Length: 72
Image (cartoon, rainbow, N blue to C red):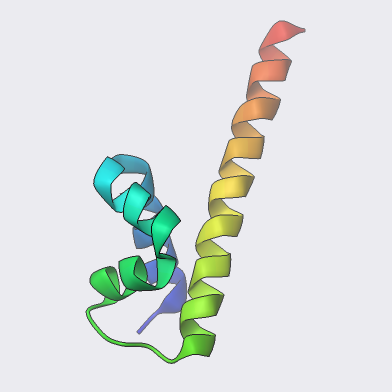
């Protein structure tokens, strides 16, 4: 399984599916297992959770910077 590809898939789904987004917020491990279809070891699940959260945070920061640039 390509972890980077799965993280991208999960990020996309969090952004496009409100129900999945809520599920990820409440229980990220269960949400990830929904996408992967397998019960992953804790270290892999935790790495994916961290990757998804980092990607979402980075994208939100980029959006904020873009908004500030429009002001100037």
